[in-house]
Length: 205
Image (cartoon, rainbow, N blue to C red; front, side, top):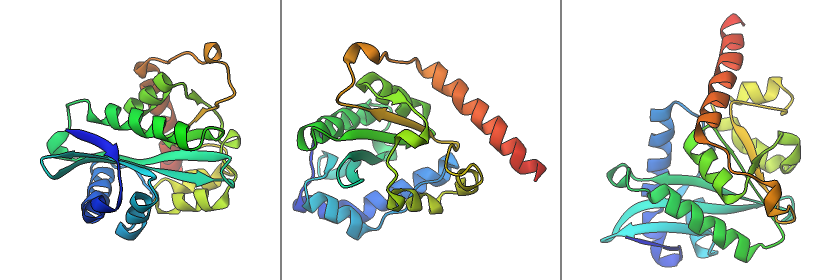
């Protein structure tokens, strides 16, 4: 298994990556910003993606996006193909793309919004901390990407203050001792609380 910085030679996997991302979101019942093969290919060409390959087969992927004139970056679209799950590959990809982000954009704050407790735990281990959406990028283009999510109405009715996703932020200027890893069960509890709060309200309406 090779986990490497993607380049032009990996563009042939772009369509399969998009299909896997969409299928995974459908199975989980969560929303995700839709991306085209062309968009994924552009990330590979610019060296802003990480891909996992085993014996010529696409195994996993994640890409970097820049927001707010480079003040923020996000590691997006983390996916592992079903044939390669359960092997700790997501964590390897996450660590690789995070290190690449820090090397390529050392002054940028790295952020994430996700509903997945496992991803939240990986973020926490890397030094991210949960934050309100107000501490994330105010780049409207980023938030417009949420329109394809089935939970977009939650984001709009709270005036973009909160959603079923949890916002997490790595600030390169923060002292390491200020950020302590959080247990995954804490994120599981947070997810259940949000689902109960917003989905219950949705049923009433």
